[in-house]
Image (cartoon, rainbow, N blue to C red):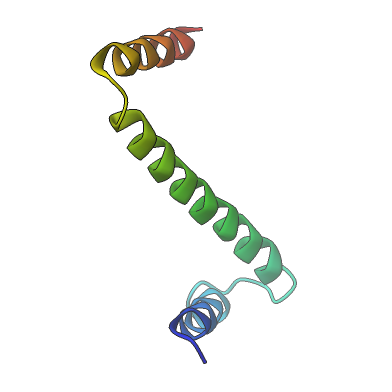
Length: 71
């Protein structure tokens, strides 16, 4: 088994035993966690791409994000 397989199995055990998540709910929790991890990877890639842009482009992106947060 890969490290990832073992980690996922440990997570399932933690969910079932330590957190007392119902057996029927475990797939939903795993799916949601997979989505969170995917979003984190995508956000990291996006951050890296933004950091490689010229200062004026980075500043424009930050300004747009700030104004979107106020809307």
